[in-house]
Image (cartoon, rainbow over all chains, first blue to last red; front, top):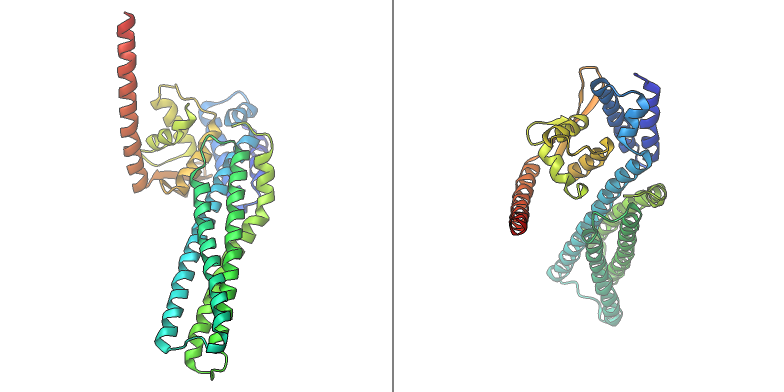
Length: 234
Length: 108
């Protein structure tokens, strides 16, 4: 002792398994190395290998870190989806209030089409909201004693449910675009026209942000899944 | 069994002062009379999880040897959670103590 290369290699063996999130990987590497050096200087183990053995199996520890990471990411995603549903509800209600205030009813000739599209809009929106609630249910019904592999499947299901919710919201916003277009047909361009158009742009932008979040998580998911679904006892 | 109480143990170990991971493990060993001798690495995922739950906060500092070190401390929510869990534990321990006491009494 000291054998810096043994500590560095051990810390790297955990950190490399966590490379799906570079900042987590860096943080864990530094914490582990600091711990091993402190342990070596305080308790004077017989060898660096003894110090690393006392720390634990790198695969098991990396799986524990990955479980915490995935749990946090899925909770954040579900919260973001919940806030998105809430924001879209407010925007849709505000737009309808604006139509009432500006007295912009649907033209008579497209009213039946409008009613059908509005029906699809409502069902798609509430389907999306229900799926977000299902996501919460999946998150809060997990037990801490579940194996990393079972937790991984659970969190992956949450991501799938939120993805379905986003699909339903895309349908809902597409219906909003159609309904807005039906109301704007034949109207002269004015500043008033910008209000519903801006609300649609806001809805699209918010959905885009969530799609980006899902895509980021989905890209990292295979590495996490490989780590958690390998045979790690808990 | 210890794993189910790990969060309470870590919160309690940090209740006196902020500490880095190694010091948390030492505090657990010392305050439990060497009874809880966990694999040292298991404490770190727990620290990360408690931080994400808002019960701990952490920051980098420099140790005396110049190495960067993550120091954890209880947040206000963490202190509240510790008080709640301590109360639950004391009720539980009291109840079990009562049961075992009467069991011993009956055997005697």
